[in-house]
Each structure stands twice: as C-alpha cells, then as structure tokens.
Length: 484
Length: 101
Image (cartoon, rainbow over the protein chains, first blue to last red):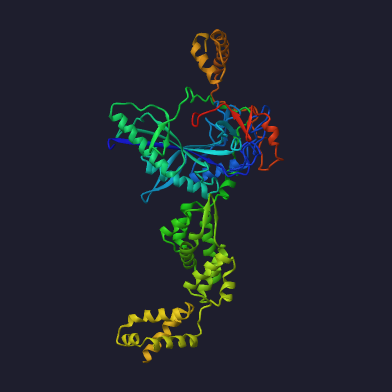
C-alpha cells in the first residue's frame, strides 16, 4: 500500500433550495405522493418549453461567491442525451462546454490544519426522476424530475478516504450555511460520486480511474474510497490491471462491487439546448448576490472566538448547524441587552447554557431545528441569573419547567417562589440553625480547618432548597463563625 | 468529411445511441446521407471565423426567465393518462435494475 498514492476527485450533486423546479413551476419538495409535482415540462411532453428559474440561478451564484469560483457572464445549457426511464425527454438539461462557474476551492481542515481543495467547475442541471420498485415492477415517479441541482466537480487533489470525508463535510457546511442546500444525504439532496485511481508514489501520470457511485453517508464515502484504493493496489501488485468502470459500495460485504455497465453509456452527445438561450449574468446581478451572501461558517466561528469569548471548540459545536448558530447568537445578544453585559461575557454565558442545557433537548432535521424553548426566553432566564433573582442551579430547574409548560421564566419563578433568598435576616436564621446542629464541624473550622466552610454552604443551600443567594450565605457564614 | 471517412460501424454506433433499429440493408443508404450532411458541416468548418464571437443561440437576450410563482396544479390524472401503464400513481416501464444508468 505504501508504494502507491491514491488520487481522488469528488463530484457532488447538491439540490438547490428553491420553491419550484429548474425549468417549470412545479413544487421542489421531497416526499410527496408519486407524480403529484409534475407538469408537461418536467414530463417532457411534446411542445412544452423550459423557462429557467431565477432563484436557482441566484443560489448558484451564492455558491460561486462562497467557494471563490469565477462566474461566466454567458453560460450555455446543453442537452446530455441518454435513454433511461428516469429521463422523460431522452436528455437531461445540464451545462457542458460553458458552465456557469469555473474554479474555486473548498476550504477544509485536515487534522486541525487549514487547507483548501481546488474545484474544476460548478454547473447547473436538472435532476432526474426516481425509479421505484412496486410489486415487482419498475415505476417512475417524476416528482424529482427537473428539480434544480448544482454539480460541484472537484480536482483530483484528495489522497485518502479521510481527506474525501473532510472535503465533503466542509463543502456541505458551506452550502447549508448559505441556504443553498439542505445537506440531507439520506434523502439524496446532497449526493457524492468519487473518481478513484492509484499511481506509484512520485509518478505524475494518472492511473485508470474507477467511478464510485451512490454512496450516501460520510462514513461510507471514507470506507468505500479506502477499500477501493486497497483493491486497486492489490490488483496491481498481483500483476493485474485496473479496468475503467463504475462501482458502488456494498456496506454489508464491506467492499466495492462493479455495477452492471452499459456499452456506450458514456457517449452523451452534448450539444447546446436550442430551447434555451444563453444564461446571462451581469455584474449588477453578481453584486446583488454578493450583498445577500450570508456569513460563512468559518468567519462566524472566528468572530465568536474573537468577540463573544468562545473557545474554538465551543464555536465548533455551536456552528455545526445553521439554526443552532442563529439560536445561540439570539440568546447571546438577548442576554447582553437584557443584563447589560459586554458581548464577550454574554456570549460565554449563553454558550455554556445552550451547550449544557438546550442542545440536549434540540432535534435537528435537515436545515431545521426544533428547540425546547425560544431564544428570547432563554436569554430572559439567563438575565434573571445575572440580576441575582435566581442562581445558576435554580436556572436549570426553571428551564426544565419552561420546556415542560412553555411558560416564560419569570412566570415560573414567581409562581413557584423560586426567587433567590437575599433577605439576610432569613439567611442568618438558617445559618444559625445549621451551625447549632453541627457543633463538631464548627469546632473543626475554628480549629483552622476552614475547608469545612463548603460543608456549611451545602447544608444552608439544602435547607433553603437552593434558593439562598450563595454570596450572602458565604458572607454570613464567615461572619458568624468568626464571632465564636 | 468525405464520403469514405464515415464507416458502416460508426453509423451502427450512432443508430444504437439513438435507439434506431437499423437493418443491415439500410446501413449503406444511411451512411451516404449522413456523410453528405457531415460533408456540409466540414464546408462550414473551413470558413475563417478568427475574431468572430461565437453564436450559441439566435436569441441572445433571455426573455424566458421565470420567477418562483406557482401556477394552478395540473391534473395528475390527466398527466398519468399519458403513461404506457399506471401502477399506484407511477409510470410503469419495462423493468430496470438499479444502477444501470
């Protein structure tokens, strides 16, 4: 294995988050009953003409800006011809010689080191239909036919399954954060094919490549590539040759298997689609796309570390999902405003609470997330801690009740009498009781063993159901113990 | 392209790609016609277009664009009538194996 170098390039199909399809006004939605989102255009009926979706083009531009690609002023839609039941027209509308975007790179981190992997191109195309197997028959559901995709073609610069996985995760993160794609591998809205070859180390020339198709999880991508590299190396070492073919990952057998290839399958006879004029993107449109480009995840994490007092690790956890990132920012901002805290302080406190309490009860699905309580309510809860109304321990209790009842924190604190006891006379009475009940420990303390102070604090908090102001408890304890 | 440059095998290949069932007896006639068409393209190819901007389409400004407005839903039943056969709301087709695209 060590004598060989793996050469891997990925092609990612990312479905664009538009409301309608790429060339017709049918809904772009997953999961509807078969053939309920279809019309003469996406069924390829004679005489139906495609009309490009403006929103899809804008999302492609957004991807170009986020990944640093060059946008072509005039790109051309082309017909890719092949016959298969998932393609009603007998061709797929794609882009070939003149794609909308060229170049760019995926910014990624490998073992903590920043790297970037170059892209060849990004082009727009329509998705194909889905073949279902019903009662032993092949039936076609055209709901997905004509939904908008960008295909992101990477240069063959990756050297292992782990690198490919890191690349995919980074690419997915960018596309999800900028609202271009929902990142759902299981539903197939983010799909990956991998071109894999090997060559002797030091060799420039590329070996014969194998295309790995239909790998629908990050883990499978890594395993499929590593197994394929090992298979090719073993083949070469035993005097065999790698055959150019399409293979897929068989998770059960933990190996790649050849897919039934079709003769002449790769002769697609691309030519410009006469139904569609060139796609023109002028400077003004590109400038508008730039203005509306959301903050990229890497920049967001850096900002949080710099201004919100987060560690890189915390920033990584909270920026792992766009909805969680937005939620955290709302809590931090809300807390800062309500309690008059500096951003770095409010950020750190918000981050700690969100990570410790909120995330546990948060469910994410695609780009959506369901939170146990609204961000402003959580900010209000943390503000109650800041102004001394409740302490941190009680805050967790109140939060649990907010989740259960949906009520605002203030209502719960008032109704349940959870406000911190700051009345020094009341605390003093409890402290006296505790001291009287524990003469042995009092003696120890006065004998110099001051560590037992913690024991007294615990007893007082227990007696007050955690509601005593810890600072006041400490002060009163010290004062009374000193009196003796 | 001169007549001799297009082989019968190339004609068969193109026919297969287009799913045209060509009888052996038809190959030569098709070959001659195709060669004439390609010969004409070769003539066009000979024109010096140095410095001329390529034309991709007769219409240069795109009038076809569409905003994301949904029209009234088309009738699913009417559209499924175009299917060779319908099975549970799907277009039934000759059976295919997964993955042999």
